[in-house]
Image (tube, rainbow, N blue to C red):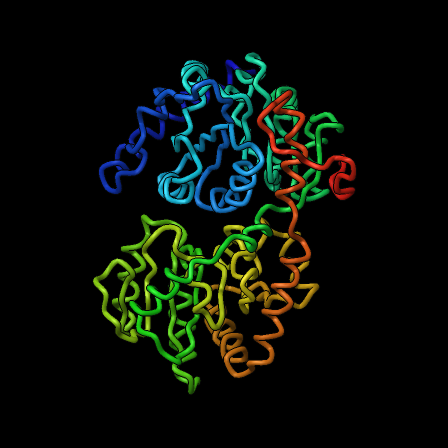
Length: 450
């Protein structure tokens, strides 16, 4: 099965190679770190220290890993941390977020046996952590053969992914046989990975690390800088976070309808999910007829109607400026994106109906009256419904405050996944004389086998 997988991986790479080359010429995508992706990584100068390799995929996983990285640094001060990503945007954010904590930030190797062997030889990790169920078969298999412990952290298997994995369950079961621990976000996630073949005693539930991002320090300096650049004003700001096509077009039409009826003259800030779409969204803003600007423009200090946040990693610092936050990927049927960062600061949040990526979290927020979720809508009906919801919230400060307070409280009461995760990682690090003491006499009873 591994041979078939490797052949299919190679075939897929060759088929997609023209697209890779086109994207490389147009956007520089995939070119960055190509040598590292082939396994030619800079060696870690450990000086005898043990190395923890934490793999994230892109921006979302990198943001979620921040409290875990902070805790690992505090608990294991004499270990070195290497962080890897796959996407360019994830790499950019990781280099900034972990510049003071990671010994290296690298690109994850292509999952061929020879590239994986080369990469592991250079990094020589004592423990590998895979964020959110990044199951790379050759990588995990090689770790197993070299007796390198592998743990899935903040694990999540969506219903869609579970259905796909079941078609190749015998192969996935073999892959999971080399996973030493899977620390999953929910009971449903833990049950799915167990049904795919992971031994029951290896599956645990921690909750989502993303709840703990609310414990990270805010960046008031950056928030102030954004406010000053975009023009500090009493006009309300609507933030559309992590948007996909055609959500920007829908939001701009909703904004037009809102401006026709709202006396508050709101402003709209759009932060597209993917940087390669920044110019596309800029074109939409330019053709809207409203005044607009972008973050990467020189400082203007003007109160433009539309703002394009065309940077990476600054969205959390913009949330305190928001009157309302719309979380994207939820009208465009991309499964929705992280609602917890705006929730942690008590934002009034609106999302679309398609939130499969965060179903359990969104359901808990809906039940707790901490979010407004739109019903299923056609693209033609979505602008009008959004405008109606925005208008109702803008006119009702008490409702906004109630949503924000409930959201912030839900985040607070669900925090603690980081501590539970670290507790479960201790046995995988083996005997270590550089681990700070941890009180195991009364471990958190909520950390349990699935």
